[in-house]
Image (spheres, rainbow, N blue to C red):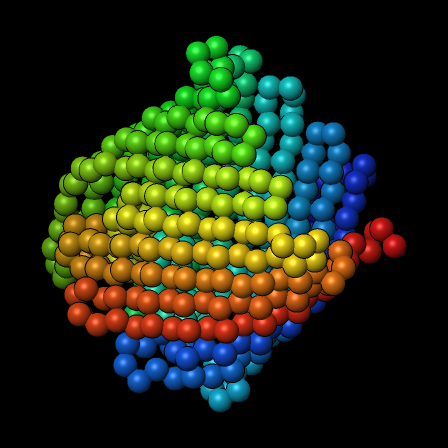
Length: 380
């Protein structure tokens, strides 16, 4: 794997700093609802063995990261769900000159678990193959102002015939200005973005514009606040006719972060139009989440997370089918570092999904124990 990754590079690895990190993780899970079913949930033990390899190189002007791995998934009582999944991702950053920098990346993930919930809080209930690519550039106009332009592409196809292949194109342009002259350690940020979401039966174009402020309050606290508006145009195929809908609304995001010597925490709220993978369109999402991490000793640390999201769309508004899903998630756990290279982690995860249009809900409790080993062989 190392030879393939290195020889596949489009340019020589930066020689100033080279890291080659093989890894191996063994995860044991007990889940009381392996299908996220609203009725007759099924319990099973799940074993996942994950060998991986990370390659990274850095110089004064270049940074390169590559990683790949395999997940062997074994169910104790449901052998038909056994699978061999895999992932690969890469990233490259290059400083062309003191003002201009470029960043690009790519990724591919094969995930066949049926109890998946995407980052937006929507259930997938299907294995899928997902590929994504991005390219961005940043240019410093002055000492106080810089511009960023980016393009991202993602494509996801599903094992379940009822889930639609989803393609997303996203273009964004942003401008920030240092307000230190008027407000210490603060920046004013403006952004425009356009996203096109495509399936075989739908097309949704979403335009957003926002203005925000980021501020470092002191050495421990910082926050960011963004708000603006959107215009969303949707088209859905319905037999021999095409249904169109135009919609306007607001978008917003608030993030508060605390970073101490042993304690780290965050609180986030957002409201926007997001991709509904596998569905015929998009969804309006409102979400709030909080996370807390604490290092008790040099070896022992713990975490706690709580999140709630509400995805909704009227029929033929943002999606051809109505969406009304509320997702509550709670997680907590402990991690013990035996050394710099070996750690043991145990955690508990709870999911509750309420389907408003069906007046039903599904809940899931997952207990997990994972042992992982990672070592930079270049340092031996």
